Image (cartoon, rainbow, N blue to C red; front, side, top):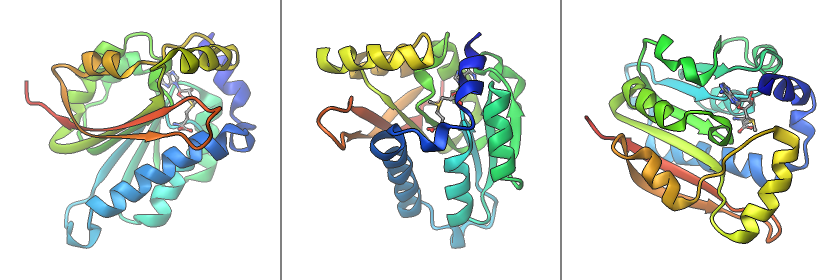
Length: 210
Ligand SMILES: C[S@@+](CC[C@H](N)C(=O)[O-])C[C@H]1O[C@@H](n2cnc3c(N)ncnc32)[C@H](O)[C@@H]1O
């Protein structure tokens, strides 16, 4: 079972060596981008944030430390991960859900974040359709993942799969295809902290009304 792999990692996740060169730089980039784009003092309405595949809730914690008024929901299908996040983030809402059942979510969000989780989804096309429905019209999605864009990245990522189970790390072309017709790309940031690390693509997406 896929969830069991993530349950296994849940208590060790914040000590993984990939935190330094991959997970933390992804979080820092998104956090800074949100700081630049959302002046929360001017927002009378609450900003609703969905963290899809939130894992142990490190990003939720960093968001809450910086944006006290954000109303944050973390979704994950691993109970182990969700339990760690719940302990770390008692104020956030947590939903135990497989993304294949996203149709069960009814509320809409201003910001949707999905970091290092998309490669593990069985039906990413269906996920994009649901995310389009869940995002408000002028909302933003931040989607970051290791991207199999060349032979070296694909080679390295084949080893990563040994620790995560089946995964599909989309190239830029595959990702563009995947988001069509639901989203437009506002920005693409490439993170590559070390030459030996696979490239991480962090996309900022805008909703297309379909
Ligand atoms: C590599 S971790 C990423 C955690 C966190 N977002 C981060 O950036 O550090 C992948 C997470 O996605 C979750 N996940 C994978 N497939 C999922 C699915 N089908 N539905 C819900 N969560 C899923 C896993 O349980 C795990 O917590």
